[in-house]
Length: 508
Image (cartoon, rainbow, N blue to C red; front, side):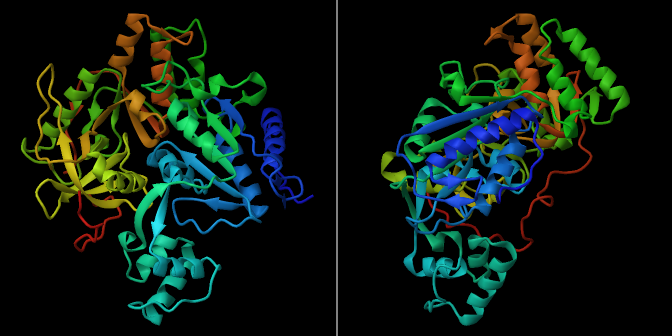
């Protein structure tokens, strides 16, 4: 028996055992760390669901460790070697780069769903370098790459096991290594999907085509996808295929933010009683704050979470005014949210390239400065493994009421962006920040409307999602005020070199 010794709660242990049975179908025996040929081509889907603090991420991380120790190849956004018939494969996915980065910060090599739906087309010469670094080939001789450059690549790979970082150490860019993207042709074996409450039906169907064994991890108390029919994909599974984690673990038991989240399950709790609970928590623990105003400094990297679009637009304009942002241009350091990519069908390959680099709808980015051509921007994609990109941009700053959005600059076509100093709670799902500001007057307005979703008052679902975005501190903002910033906007907090940026080639 080579399985790792793990201390689980009873519900986690039951989930582990049932997942282990499902994994045997894909040819992985966790009990004996043994790889075998897959037993079936049929699709097997399971879900592990539970509220914040129930141990979903811990279970996912332990499963990843056990599978890696058993010799399963982990497919990430780093580099994907040629699949071998005698090996099994695992991909750990999240709907957004920010959600994937939360897992990566915990040692789990996650990537985005889009990055797995499409596979890169590698330059054949530079792919030989990647295969050599990964131990799948001999040291190559590449025209234009000296032995010294290859040695630098090898040393980099030994220290961080990242193919892109190693190639960068040899003087290569991502666009040198990856020449394009194509729809994945061969399936993988096992897929873990975190934050699966955000999946829509189309993504779910795509994933079932790729993974014979698919395990979903999700929180049933979150909000369903905006464009869904009202439910979450794991709600369509038979009860026998759903594992519920109900226990709040000891390591989370003293977390006042999670205590507040779980208190929302009380059917007798109204908004006023909930605010009193927040006030009491704030009086004894600095991880909860009853704030009298929104902090403009925090909004630069951690958006204020709101329910109503009108509130979001007002806060964005207040933020820009606080930093004296000119009306006809963006300041370096302003936060943006990708709202999609506007490209004609003939530029499909470019769309795939941009999406693979993290510019998918909902991606959070920071404006670094103008590009070399009119309408182009230098951007930092939050949570992406290669965060700096140059791209044709259409930036929209929305106005109140029915007025058309103001566009400080725009290319004819490209990636579209909205301002990101404030976002709706719906769009914040899947992301976490060290400190989160929740605009409480909006939650109050939702409570006054009396709307109910999936048997739960809407205001409670909004509050639950919003406060569980906070990793360390929750700031419950009770007044419609904005505090003056204490410093100017900038990019010093980002991993951006002082020298001029070397970005991907600026194309459409």
